[in-house]
Image 1 (cartoon, rainbow, N blue to C red):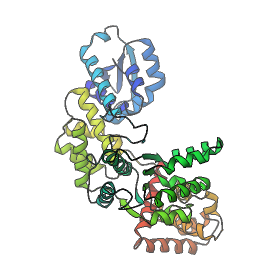
Image 2 (tube, rainbow, N blue to C red):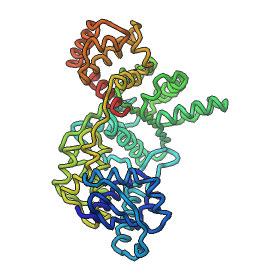
Image 3 (cartoon, rainbow, N blue to C red):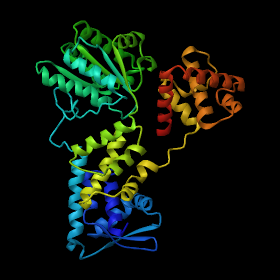
Image 4 (cartoon, rainbow, N blue to C red):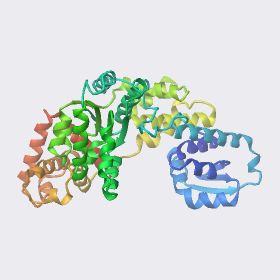
Length: 455
């Protein structure tokens, strides 16, 4: 990779770390003018840009350049009077601005969230890729569109982060809006729903808040797991849910876990959720990931070789958003250079996304993630309490310490209130046995591990 390609590769990556405005202000009109003995010299248009890049962005610039070329040891900046006369560099910067605009709007700049429904028009069934990992949830969604309030009510869709839950539930709303324009539809995240209740209580108009939701024909609540532990919010949602259900109004709910795995959720709400259709979205297989990438590339009016598509699909397996992020990165490179990258350049561009080392998981992170998942305090897990609601989460944490970190049983026992090592052995064996027949438990543990990796 020569110095021009190296800098253009950096531009393609750095735009994902800063705002569009900052990128246009500080990186337009820059380029590498020399690369010798590990020292990179970058030309900038003026002293103000030089000072800003040195003080504000030098660390991230060096990190990206070093990842792209391990021989880079230092980055310096120099103001060149003739800099503005370099047409090729200016052209590349102009193309990058357009690419950023396109990427930031996900290639749908003309589509905006509907103020009445809160739905994003870009989420449709046409753009939703169906595979073995989501076909049940997709089929249930289509059935609801045909007969809102009659087919599956409520529909409870659950799955891990970035697998398309929001896309699917909003597709239901958008399709019903097209077929039945007279119906009143409302999409809400559970955080916004909770915020609305808090504001209503504060302003002494909770009845007005509930009255609004009584007239909804289709209510979609995203990430319902965040209602856990919020007793007042759960109480008001329960009444709203019952009112809509009794009138055969459609309710659609999404979560990162099944109802029975949402701790601190009132039993009456859990019972309502389980009374409808529960459909999971799991990890997409390789063929589906390839199909998703091809569809996204078509949306962006881009074309990449089968080798590049397969490379991305093979190396990014757990998250559709990450697939699209990788595609965005090589798409930006293509727009910067007016040509698609080859496989070696693709590997360079996606080096951080694919080969970046995972954050180190330690016992503290596992305890913290387990407590967060089960809506407990960390002290509750470590305490000697034998309360039923604490015993299983503690056993899960013990299992993870042994299975993920290979901690000794005596160490695990000491970690949890000085218990004997036989207690840790029992906990590990119990969870390991349950995992053989309980898919929900396996998914819970997978979510806890993901959370621990993010801490």
